[in-house]
Image (tube, rainbow, N blue to C red; front, top):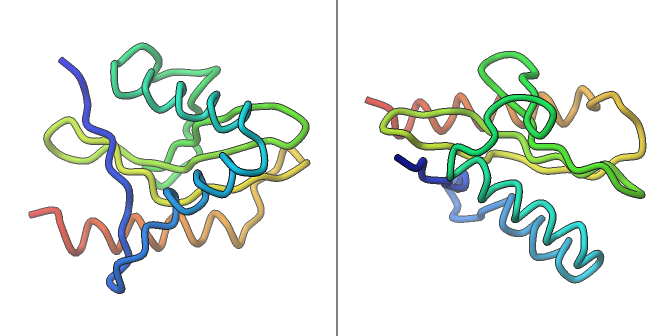
Length: 117
């Protein structure tokens, strides 16, 4: 049985991960394709453990693609076999910037508050 991959939407109607993916598609089509394949693998339950995803704490995981820049999509499991992608970044280093981790955690809490019952 597959999971559903959803994207966090702000109260104002923005969908930050989809905006990131569109920008990535324009700037680096190969990395974009790799990330989309990774999301499909998560949806199809082909890879819920390392090395593709990695637990980063607070219920969050990261979907990682290593290239010239590391591309990361932060997500969490939700009720009813859902995966919710809340934030995405590209960076050169191995460490996740604290600011980006805070954004992902804040969006996770917001989503849970608005949609989990």
